[in-house]
Length: 112
Length: 112
Image (cartoon, rainbow over all chains, first blue to last red):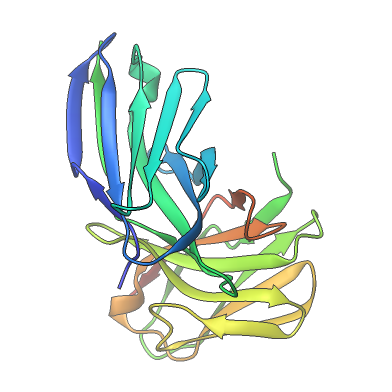
């Protein structure tokens, strides 16, 4: 079964608002990554957080990781219409694993 | 953009025929992955490779085989295509399991 599960499945907000997406996973991880997919395109990497990190920032993105709860959140601040896309979390499991597994994604719609 | 190319980009094939999808990279990355993307399922890992001739199964490997005879090419073969294999297939590459993955543009396969 898939390692990560995003929540909510779909999110609709007004431009300028913040968007928060959550990801839960099942097993211990080496790192957790977030990706964006625009309609009809391949995935693009946004940010990576390692298992020993709790928070990471990149521009308008803020990612948190709580390994005790096996969960992560992605916050997009001051959203723009161009942020409309699907967002996926992906995990690399613990030692000895080469698998990069994805969740089902959150579809974000930012209304101008 | 990372040098990763999938071919073909679109294919329609008949049930029961073999189909081979190609992923070609120019980055000399060690890890290569094949995923399928279906509505409601997100991305599911089919097979992956951690080196030349080193491959392993992912979550949904039944009906698929792979080969990697050189670093730059990772081939996915549907041995006898079925309608359930109609999907969008993505290839991804990664230098290391601790780093980000880069995705191809996808191959839309329709089995009729």
